Image (cartoon, rainbow, N blue to C red; front, side, top):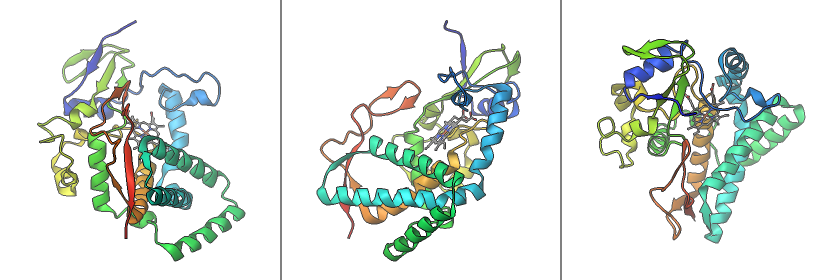
Amino acid sequence: MPSPVLIINDLDLIKDVAIKQFQSFPNRQIPNIFKVKPWNANLLSVRGDQWKHVRGILSPTFSSGKLKKMVPAVQRVVSNLVNNVTEKAKTGEMIELKEFCGWFAMDVIAGVVFGLQRFSDFLQLLVEAEKEQEAQQEKPADYSTANELVYLDMCLNEALRMFPPGFYTMRESIEDTEVGGYKVPKGMRAIFPFYAIHIDPEIWPNPTKYDPERHTPEARATRHPCSFLPFGIGPRNCIGMRLAQLELRMALAAVLQRVTPVLCEKSVYPPKSFEFGRITSTDGVWVKFQLRD
Ligand code: HEM
């Protein structure tokens, strides 16, 4: 049955709901499609104390120390990716990036899960051998250099501003409360429409222009913290944010050393369609790769 929702475009109020009043808004209202253990503990959907419990267990997996340990596994997947794009560049094939990058993201997850759980001597040896071989060919970004790629980060952030994979997130109240002087009953959803915020010309002048300079540390310092929310905000923000940023930096730094993506006959820009809760492109995201000298 349809029920009223609160759509908040006031940045201070988003901050209040997501951070200051998190105790009153700890949940999302997303049906859990998984009914059996352990899949029903899916972090996006779980509520209340179960969320606290699961998030508490999973959070240490994404600490700086654990992320550093994931680097060899990510490097392995990245070097496969580089080989792949180099081959595609040689044949001049057109590539659909949604599927191509989707496989990469899945490989990283599979690689890091395996890497964290069973980092046996055997695997360690294998990784070391591979690292040595790679070091002789070229230098992929490691954890510390990946964290120093400031301009690449600015470019990534601008892409996430214009094309965040999701276009809103939400919280649900677990009690009658008040937000910015407005009464909010128990069970009401508060929607944060962050894509609309990302393209609001009052916050981001000339919003359809791709301009990484908007994300210099100085520019960021002058903006409201809720003006850029591709990974959400507050205690229930994206738990995978730092892994996502790390793998994106490492992949792009390595791939762009070898090839340049260029538009091709099937390229459609900007991507045309929105699906429920996410931005995508029905026409696919097509490019060609050109080998760099
Ligand atoms: C560019 C990549 C990604 C983007 C843009 C993204 C974005 C988001 C957003 C907007 C949310 C909702 C946050 C909120 O409500 O405040 C979210 C939640 C979440 N994301 Fe991501 N995400 C990305 C990658 C990942 C990865 C790689 C993982 C796992 C390794 C991941 C796991 C999760 C989980 C488990 C949640 C639910 C967190 C909770 O409810 O406690 N995400 N993500």
